[in-house]
Image (cartoon, rainbow, N blue to C red):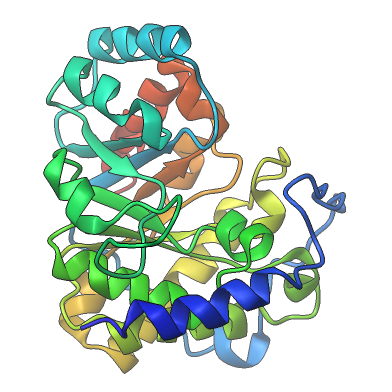
Amino acid sequence: MAAAPSSLASSHLSRVADLRRAAAVAIPAVPQQLRIGCSRRRAQRVVAMAGSGKFFVGGNWKCNGTKDSISKLVSELNAATLETDVDVVVAPPFIYIDQVKNSLTGRIEVSAQNVWIGKGGAYTGEISAEQLVDIGVQWVILGHSERRHIIGEDDEFIGKKAAYALSQNVKLIACIGELLEEREAGKTFDVCFKQMKAFADSISNWADVVIAYEPVWAIGTGQVATPEQAQEVHAAVRDWLKTNVSPEVASSTRIIYGGSVNAANCAELAKKEDIDGFLVGGASLKAPDFATIVNSVTAKKVAA
């Protein structure tokens, strides 16, 4: 299903060498006032059609943790009271996956934060989907903005990685989202739809796909999209799926929000009909806060 790793990987690696930014690039300051509207022309034809899937909350631990801190976090997660009607997934760094899987309650599934584009081989530093399956990992996060804008992965490369992971029965959290300058220019929908198309061009079966809308300007900045901003984009993405894939996929695919989600703002976000859960960064490293976010499904029930 995926293109041969050699040609795509070679072209991708050459592009990475020309990246403007290194991993330490600071995220630009975010103005206090952001435009709620992304594109008036398109917003008028957005059809809100809430997803029919189970509420979903993922915790992306990124490049954080030690054996001791992760042991403490897992212990606290095991002791937490979590609503039963929520799919919960955490994504530790690769080197701690085995530790987490061997100690975490079966109530919570485990995801990888990345995967190679094809079958394993002479790809130093990469992890294959087959290896994830071998150690019992059920999910992978692909298309995260930090992989796009720091590492330099482009839409085509991400789409092919997604297709190969799914072909090996690894479920997908597919990330999309716009930069601050793209939102300010009214290009939010253009960017998100282009990223969606790259996934759709490579994916034939959406049953194991969760879409995560993560505006780049809100990731790790403390600036969260308002419930209205998030809902507007989620509804537009669902409408895109309806038009470009199928009404059935649009209805069944869960679209979750990520970007400075925390225990204080999750309930208001969860009330929006097209927000089917969250992908959580920093707050997922604090078990009580993460549990609160998981349990924000109760706000969804009240809103419904």
